[in-house]
Length: 89
Picture 1 (cartoon, rainbow, N blue to C red):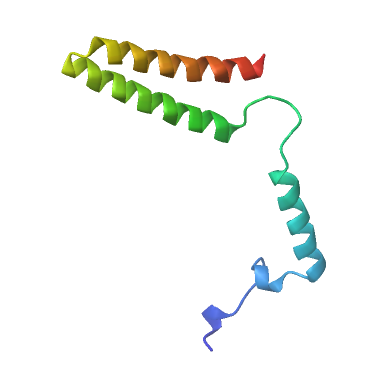
Picture 2 (picture 1 turned 180 degrees about the vertical axis):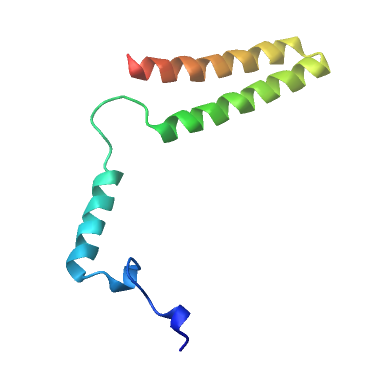
């Protein structure tokens, strides 16, 4: 076995069973949803991606001359933004 393949300080293989249990407990605590309605950073990123998708679709509809679809897409993006804002209040 080569020395570079051996676990060293800070590697998970060198943690004691108690430390591994504590890390597992911390992971469980992070996964539990909070009681408040404040959107998390992940929620905000997902919303931004959805809004971007709607804006891209709206721009495509505008280029095709489909104004009805253009405004529908803009409204959908605005609804996502409004719902995210509503969670903070």
